Length: 231
Image (cartoon, rainbow, N blue to C red):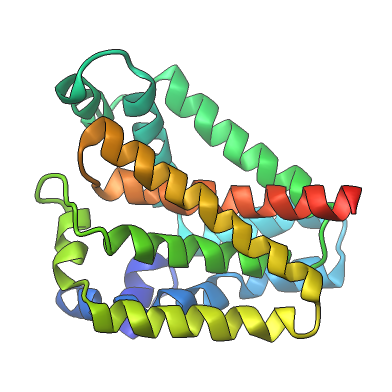
């Protein structure tokens, strides 16, 4: 797990990048670690806890996936054929679509967290990491980047172990708060991003997987907030 932890977070642990793709099964466990500080902030109910928790989350995981979300949104929204969309997604410049997507994802998370119990961010981050695992399981790489590198290491055993961990970690909350089960619907957002990516790009790269992570987390929090607010 140490190797994948050093890749998915900014936590200063020494990891071997070459071995990271053999630890894909540990994605759900990474969620347990990456959400620990933000969840503590929410539990303590500090002033502006929702904002501080989100800042703490990105301090731990970095901004790599947000950058991927921006590139992905630019590619999805541009008009043209598949080659044109891929070209725009890989462009180093961020367009208005990418900026809009990042702002909306951040706002959804900030405003949803203030309506939810302290454990919601853990469930959202758990969904986010598991959705990334499912995206890698498509084995549809675009190019030779990081996405392709990790897809090469993906297999049935890693997916099965990751799924077991996802279920066990999720049950640790659901058994005490059955209402939290609705959070699992957040995975539908990740599935939609994968479907849209395959439709527009024909395959997935690191930007697509970053978009899966960010949109799944935000979507999970949004669904839970709507249920809590109207329930």
